[in-house]
Image (cartoon, rainbow, N blue to C red; front, top):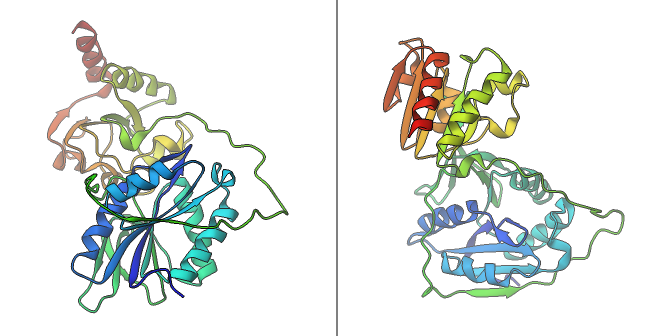
Length: 326
């Protein structure tokens, strides 16, 4: 017997340390838009410890039904335990679609769930739609961002991971009503256990309001210190194009672009970045783009709100000096 009267768009509400990840609110916003006048219910599934308050928040953000798996075993992310419970839920409610964020957890968990359900999965989507025949259409960049592929999953349920910072957030409304369905968690797999989980504190690039990124115009890895100083003065963080990450000059968590992070800061400063389609895919929606490059024909200038033609080793120190004076 299904738990739902109609088909559901099920959003995986990722949480860490008892707090729901912001990408979940974006997924709810898209699910609400997709449901429209269709016979689709927007639902969420939350696994965690002492997270009933977060489940209520999901209702305020538009979930009509929240499947709550609450147990101490869900405090740390256990891919096998999470997968087993999600698969059991999906088999019971037969959702129309399941949405995950393209986070470290989402990218790890979604393929496991899809494989167990023997259904397809489209990764790193930038948009979703439903066609006139009711088919779920998943849109993502292909061929390094040069085209947008429209993918239709023939198996059920349709499954997608969606990039953070590409969808509109759902609006919070405490007048919204919904149902929290208390679920009975499956037991741990006795053959193994999570002994410890350590969170490495790092930068939160997608949420930064100012990003100062370096590209091939940098001559040495040590020159990122110059960008770090500028970013610190502006209250921002340092980003990078992929080639410098591949060279090992800076960690992958700093990478902006098609295969890295998508950012939408208030200010994005591109230092010595030519503006390949791969990089542009991750930052072109920034509110203000400032490009510094010695090549006046660099593609980045076509997307910049302000372009400075010149040597970054002359311009950036002057910017730092002026900011320190102010």
